[in-house]
Image (cartoon, rainbow, N blue to C red):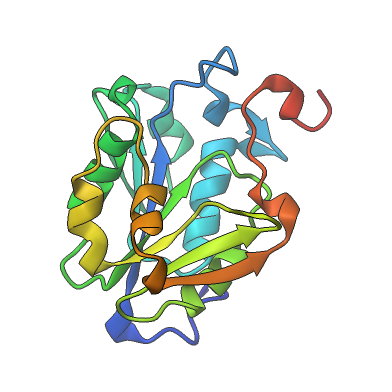
Length: 199
């Protein structure tokens, strides 16, 4: 079964999905991505949305937490370990980008702790992609994740250091940005136990 973005995708413009999931959850107090969110672990729910949106391949960058393997079992994803997540999100971006196939025209860089995003919203970002551009969601007054980067920006993303993420590249290329407005609530992330429904 194809995801909501698959039927109108140009096969010459395949978009990879990179899911950043190597964070240490220090503010949460334990590994939040393994916590249940509406019936399944948060990281599995996030991975499924990328698959359902029609992204291919879906590449997940995790820490060396061994429980991730079992939680992601059965999904059509590739999992990569970040041995040094404490060095910043740029390290995970680099690991993910280096695994993007040569035939991929672009990559969506998503984070695993935005549980209110839907596959349909992700598919809307995919449909908005144009060669040479960066698609960025806007949640009310603010831009956020997940951006979609044309391959021409990969070198700049690979040059990032420390905790600088893709937004630094977005800011450097205002002429290339395509903004897509999504519902404000979809941009919310979960950082602490009190952010969980039913806490």
